[in-house]
Image (cartoon, rainbow, N blue to C red):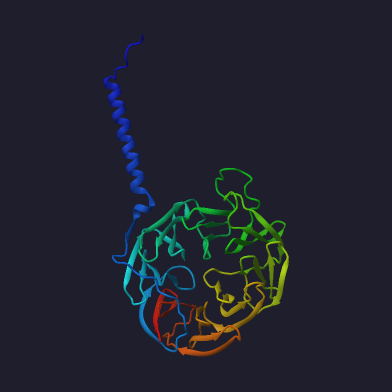
Length: 397
């Protein structure tokens, strides 16, 4: 029978040292974690979601302004809350001008989106734009977070069903709990080799429902890849169609089963379904070269898809994505107000009929010499303009 084990003084010292080192490492990880460099001030009372504009306004009266240096052309409206970003702070403001909640972070903001009744902010950390937080739009409470390696430069990629990013290297989409549903492109330190079918230069991406559309330039040409947003394994894309397109072509609109690309050389819009078949081809105005995320924006409005390029707001049929018309002189993307379309012009906010493609009237606004892009949004009885680094909120009557 062996003698019972007895701890010596050296054993006790060694155990104590290990315990101290472990505590130091845990504390260091806690203190240096990205979430530690944040401060959340949630709403102190319950707010109700504000309804969308049900009718076009006849007059607009300026109510208040908010600084907003977030990326993107249009204002971000989530559950009727006006979401702004300035000096490291996200702010949710009611249509009446009351601050509902704030979220401060000591990191640079990469993208700002809204979906699922949440505000989704992506920040640039030590591993690129991979620090993401989702906050309840009305309460300002944490909903979900994620942290992963990502490119340093990304643009927003979102729909009502998915949010993510696109860069020249890769595309990534997340579901409402911020769990990744698909990644496509170059992957740093992949867990398994051979999961990605291509590693090309991505030029554009759009998503809606179960469809993710990507254009990219490869050694063997320029391609439109149509794939599902929810493959069986998020690391292994499931491509449904590969379509050869013009070298300078890029995505301009997407529906649940069709994606449309614009060719600046021929000034044509061609749309393809998930079987790779061309479903429409139509001449279009000059939308310019491949999009810059700071000046171009696709949008989904009732009865039409739209695409904004400087000075032009294009309309597309919702199913075939055939180009159906344009509004010249538009300063930015528009918003639906009942059965009418609102968008900014040099004279103010135009009220347009998207069926007849006629501007019925323009509500005069003095922008004090501002001449840049103006995105328009609305909710809760207000119309919001985004002018560069500022949001201007108008009461709609």
